[in-house]
Amino acid sequence: MAPVSQQSWTRKEICRVLSLEERQLRNWEKQGLVSASENYAFPDLLTLRTLNTLRKEKIPVSRIRQTFQSLQERLGQRPGDVKIFTEGRRIGVQFSGQRIEPVTGQLFFDFDSAKTRTLAPRPEPQRNREQSDFWFQKGLELEQSNAGPQEAIDAYIKAIELNPAAAGALVNLGTIYFHKRDWKKSENYYRASVEADPNYALAHYNLGNLYDERNDPDRAYTHYHSALRIQPQYADAHYNLALLHQGQGDMMKALSHWQTYLKLDPSSQWAQIARREIGKIKQTTVVPGPRPVLLRP
Image (cartoon, rainbow, N blue to C red; front, top):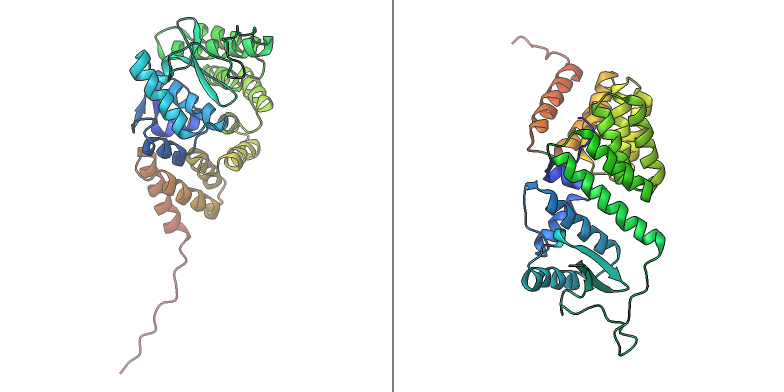
């Protein structure tokens, strides 16, 4: 399977892009935070990224749900349409140039005093990260549009200039250059993404694809296994490892990865290929037993 590009998102792809487990996505659906779907548009991606950020900030689900409902009912906005931020345990949104509380619709208050405070300028690193995130999202939009790849490249480069640790922008640049077959630039950006975030499963997976494409199975193995160490249910890493082991003649390891892949992804077109390859391996590795001895009466 090819490196992941953020131009279209099936359910499986959205989990890969955001390094989400399918289980987490299902939980959000059950909790009514997102609608169940098999295909995701750009605003859906932003909503899920926001949810993931709030989850990491340990914001209670009840407060997230209340915020999302208020955004829709009071402001007529979806979570992916506005900038959501946290201050301590509070959730705020950037809307029409103001920072407000979505539940009350009021400007942000300092609850440690009885007066509205003038918000101090945000520290330079925080402003840079916010601007970097803007250019990253702009790059995603450009990749989805009919714009040429150079416009997306320019947007991602701006994101990286503002935040050199912008792992998502780095990995997307790597994928753009992968499709251009510029292996050196692709490798450089993928490696920079791994350095920025060593636990970024997508970056390791795409590096594995790059080395596989360049006939370097040892380094491909290393990065596929790194992706699985970080995200054990990374179905596509199992798929590609199965192909690698099968190509090297290690049928038992290939069979193990094919079977794991099928458990994780039993219904896609790739699952049909996995079943076919499992059948081939079983046919070629089954050792026939001794023929029965026929006794004469």
